[in-house]
Amino acid sequence: MRPNVCSRRRESDGMTRPPITCRLRTPAFIFDVDGVLLASPHERAWREALAGFADPLLFTTALYQAQVAGRARLDGARAALAALGLADAGNRAPAYAAAKQRCLERIVATEGVTAFPDALRFVRALADRDWSLAAASSSKNAEAMMRAVPLNAGRTLLDAFAARVCGRALRHSKPNPEIFLLAAAELRAAPAYCFVAEDAPVGIRAARAGGMTAIGIARLGDANGLRAAGADRVVTSFDEIRVGDLTPPHSSGDAT
Image (cartoon, rainbow, N blue to C red):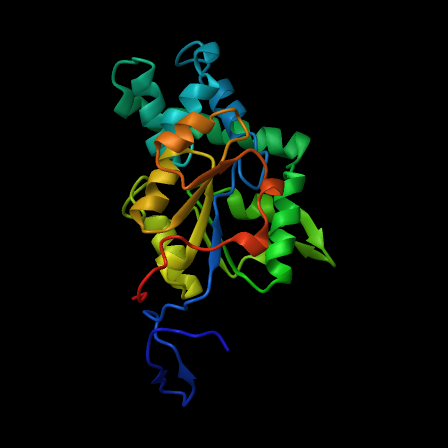
């Protein structure tokens, strides 16, 4: 039985369950999806959709990581257009966001979705050790994409996650920690006992703001940016992480 830091309460149906504020003192792992678990074509879709607004070649990987990755679609569209110096970026953002979604759907329909092999190995390793796992993404496409990726024994990647906070209408976007705090709450895990895997600086800042351990996944050679955002550790592949060595550095004292 996992130790926890709350009392239990009796429901009207006679069952005794921990209240939603219960926080387990066992580690949990929260994954961003795009660029961490999936080689999803979001950056490409944003670039192609820019035609008609600006030169698509201006949409660089650096711009994607700094302005778009980890943000809700409309927020990302607004930030990208503003960074490119387009006039009236706020009013043009909805059309750009809609064009990006059409591009993404076309690419996925014709080319499918690819998962990073190291990410699948890591998820399996955590699941084999009974870790609590969550997927947390600003993208409304994340769950459908993960459902298309086989994991093992007839299960999909999506099936690995007890909590799925993907594409929800949250009050705050990253770097606010709302999305990760909600994932932790749905796992009933104390934030101090949670690890977060992120590939975007804005996501690293969100994890740290939530009191969680932030692991930067630098697949795009952007390790310095992830460190500057406050990552506790930066790797280029999940193969560099030994599950048995994971100890939350922010878990000293009582969790609440």
